[in-house]
Image (cartoon, rainbow, N blue to C red; front, side, top):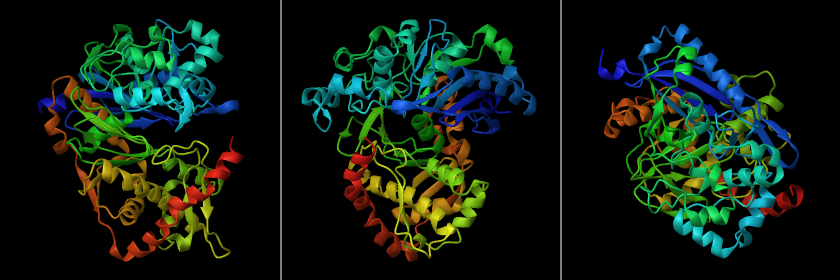
Length: 512
């Protein structure tokens, strides 16, 4: 048994759809995993919340179950690593217990307070505010309220009872880390979506006074910052005993799904791209320096270590669009059946174009009022056309984003692809054909972020070196663009950005 395989990491990937819990050895092997769904509660005014206490209950149960079902010796669990959704806020008391629901990343109830704090005429901001943020941080909080600043301001001004009970305002990954350790701690990576650190100085572990003042948030409720990927502490004896794992297991600082995806894809050298198709989608890569394209929502954030950056962008609806189609149009079909159906339609879906902006869009356009749709339907349109059009629509949006990303971080090499959507050979081939790029699929792409979280812990614990990550990430497929499909996809993509431009005014009028 190698030293790497002797170490087992309890990894948690908290997606929007619920937590995935797994045990991963530090040779990259996923020994056991399970996913439990959690519903998002939607309400008036843009409300979107989840029960954070339920996450912790599910994780405790899944950990015990995983040890038993996987035949894993809990005393070999040497580390705990949390990754997942970000730009959400969990209000907790001094002991780390939630005093209210998690305000999810798509919750926009903070919009009135965000606009009052920093809104204005320059792309939605007051000029002095946006220039300060771009210079110091590289990103800017949204005047739409659907980010941690908006969530904090909403709790502060609209929910004073919860706010008064709150000791810490935590990202979900930091909340779960506190459940294991009893300590409130965050990192520049986990606090990426708050845009409150001076990213010109990655070694400074503090919030920027100017940005905190401009945001109008309560600094006293922000968690202390530790270096990205460092050790917070050991699991508390009570938690270790309840779960059946070693009390010596070390907990590393939480990471966003974007950070763990980079590690889990093996694309960890500067400029190496990975693309994720999960509930949402993004294209990212490590970057050597701070950079921002404010017009297309591209920015660099604190990266995989205290000396590097990571490109951030976000396509709001990807796998979620296929989920919507399944639940509302093809009730009863699972994802495999849907993609098999899509394979019966030709490339280009007989001219049907789907725009995947079912919850608005963030990159390459920032418009929460945008909405999706099927375009160019006819009496001849089939069920297969509709499903394939959804897969192609997500790919068209990625091609639109790549247009600007190629200027921001030029790289013509292969793109590593991961996420639940990447399990489909058809969807991977559509991505290659539509974007004209080669994709390398990571083996077991559904668990890539779980594996990435574990390997990230291995680095923090000193067991792994960053230069070993690419070799610990096996591939199981390479998808080259099919030249025979280029003409049809070029013709359809030529219409795609224009569909947004011509409907933008309508979106604004109908979705105020």
